[in-house]
Image (cartoon, rainbow, N blue to C red; front, side, top):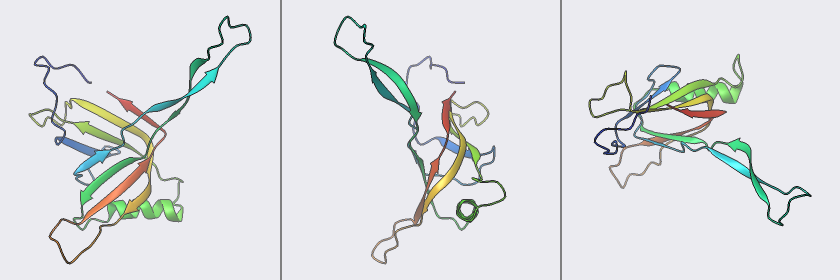
Length: 152
């Protein structure tokens, strides 16, 4: 559960883990898209005394979460993507994904904050850009769509 720190210092953004249904399948170097948004609805009742519109919360929307990692030879993410593409036994083959921001002690059992993506599944898996001109690490990107995001 998230609690404010006594020293008020922010947490480092490099100290995190990602779990799929409680298992750490792959190590990721970057996570982005932990967004939650309600589309506002403009509303005006006929008997309102002013000509101004009210703003009411509409449908909640979630951006795709993007996970990046260096390719290590594991095909677990490609296998999951293939299940979505080919229509596995349950469709879509969703998982609950958690992103845990750890404290300086790397305490996995007591994370500083946790984002939980409910019923997430890979909508896109991008392979690396390969070039003979450089010496960068081969990076792949997994885009996860999900039904809900909760923060603890």
